[in-house]
Each structure stands twice: as C-alpha cells, then as structure tokens.
Image (cartoon, rainbow, N blue to C red; front, side, top):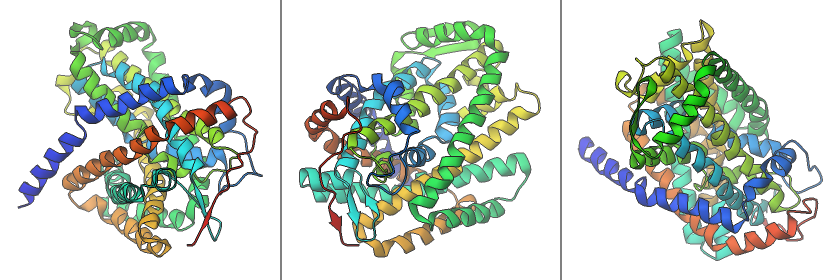
Length: 461
C-alpha cells in the first residue's frame, strides 16, 4: 500500500516539476523582465542600498532588512550547497550557467510577486501585517478560492520542505561529523525553534538579521579560499561552463557535458528550487516590512534572488567545477550525489574545510526552518484564522523533534509537490496584476521616498 502511494505521489511530482512548470516559471521570469524594463538594473544602485536603510515611519512590523533576511533565511539553504552539486552531477557543468541565468531573470519575478504582496497587504486589529499571493488574489482579483488553495498548499508544504527535511539534514550532518545521536539533535532544534517562532515575526526577523549575514559570509569565505587555491582554473572553468551549457561531450579535467537539454533541465530546476522566485513564499515576509510604497520593498526583495542564486550558487558552481578540473579523478561517476561532490571540494581546505561546510549546512538548514515557520503560520491563519496559530506552532515544533528519526522520502515528495503547486496561483496573481505593477513601478522608481496613498485595510483577527 505504501509503495503504491509513493509511486503515485512520485508520478505527480514528476509532472508538476516537469518541463511545463519549468517553462511556465522561466517564461514568467523573461516576460516580467521585459515588462519591468529590466528591473534588475536597479539591484546595485537602489535595491541593495534600500535593503540596509530603514523606513521607521512607514507602516509595517519589521525593517526592510529584517523582512529580506527572513526571506533569505528560507531561500538560502541546502539547495545552494547540495543542489548545485546535484545539478552538475546530473546535467554537467553547463547546468551552472542555466542556474545562474534563472537567478538573473528570476529577480524580476521576485520583484513582481513582492510588489503585489505589499500592495494588497492588510493589518489585523492587533497591528500585525498580513500579505502574500492569497491576499493579492482575494483583494486584487476577487479570487479568494484560489488564494485559499495557495495558502493551503504553502501551509502544508512548510512542515515538509521547510521543517522535516531541513532538520533531518542537520541530524545527518551532526551524526556523521560529530557523532551526535539524531534524537538529541531533534530535541535541541525543536527547543530552539519553539523559543524563536512563539515570539512571532519580530523574533524570527531578529534572529535572521544576525544569522543570515553570518552564515552567508562564513560560507562565501570558504568558497573564496578554495577559488584562491584553484585560481589558475577559474577562467578555464568559466569557459567550460559556457561551452557545456550548449554542447554535449568531454572537456578537460574529467568534465562531461550532458547536452543542452539536460543542462537546462537541471540548471533551471535547481535555480528555481534555490531562489523560490515565482513560488510566492518570500513575499509573505516582504508584506511585513516597514515601507512607504510597494515598489520600495519589491526592489529590496529582488536582491534576495541576487544574493541567493546570482552570487552564492555561482560561487558554489565555480568551486565545484574548478575542483573537478584540478582533480580529474573527481567527476559525476565517482560520487553518489551532489553532497559528496561538495564535500570533496571543501575537503581541499586542510582541517577547517569540512568544518566550514558542516556549519554552513547546519546554519542554512536551521534558518530555513525559521523562515518557513513564518510562511506557514501566515498561510494557516489565512485559511482558519488566528485560532490556528498556536496549534500550528506546536505541530511545527513536534515535526522538528521527530524528523531525525522517521523516514522522510514520502514526506519530501508530498512537500515538494505542494511547493510546486504553490506557484500556479501565485503566477496567476503576478501575471494578471502585471499592468498595475508596471504603472506603479514607473510612478515610484525615480521617487522611492513617495508615500503610497492606498489605505491598508484593517481586518478582524
């Protein structure tokens, strides 16, 4: 019976994460890039600058930086470390280019979905900000039924992709490297998670503001050390990545290109999984930001995809490809998965290399647990009201506690399927409201200090 269920879910997952979904998401990225006049050009000059500034007089619960780091906490995860390795192992080095391009164009979608999340956000009677695709569908398009589906998919997915699988990864790493029993890891993570998430968005954002910059810097420093060690292979690696993104065949250093179809499939899929642009998750955090107009926070949110995929995933890809070129015995046939490939790369740094990778995975996974806890509770509250918050948090903590000691294959498949299904209603909202987004972008882009006069409705808790 269980095998039958597993096969059915696996078949559904293959469909929802197949070529139609990849084409839909990548097509939306390209469409919105042109509709916004290539909004990515403002990443450095406006987006990053705004992300470290404050707008305390504006409506919102947390700073723009707090909202960004909460979203980054959920998106910068094991996909940046293991996912890129998997893409290279299955799609060849050319997958790195497609993963990177997905991030570049995905910034426009992250901008658009964050814009509608802020534009249509609401305030509860006790002053909490609520927003996301569900509110945009309800208030902007009068499609509450579709908003309910999005919230239901996201709320259920949070237990799997946001909690169970992440805690399981932490437990596996701790057992392998420190010989800590999985049961102990589950209890510790559950306690730490409970302490933070019962404090609400302000507590989550407070932890993420400190944890995300530290973990990203710690991991990037490790990548830089490896690239310095492999410095004479960096230019050749870039050439090989570009070449094998379009052709099939062997290259220097034991690298093999799987062909353009496989490179696109795994590169784009890993890029989408990494930055979540188009899935509608990160805008839920963006809606809580203190910002005077939606364009302002949308620019800040789009930098999340820049850091996550354009920078971190690219660095991981270069680390792996230069390592393979320097050590021809390391290739897709010599490892079982992307995690092993990444471990071999970081093993080049004597003593501290494995430590950097291990701590990176632990911090990345735990931050994802916190970020998705916020996404999930906002969605559950939309579906059943404020009365669902405490039960949701309790269940989330329980899942974290038992995750290291239960089989997660089926849980992962179901959560991954639900994660993909989130994208459909979110993209409906983004595409149908794109005209309004373009209008406001033109209105505010050169006057980001302007105050949006659209009132924020207050709803009953």
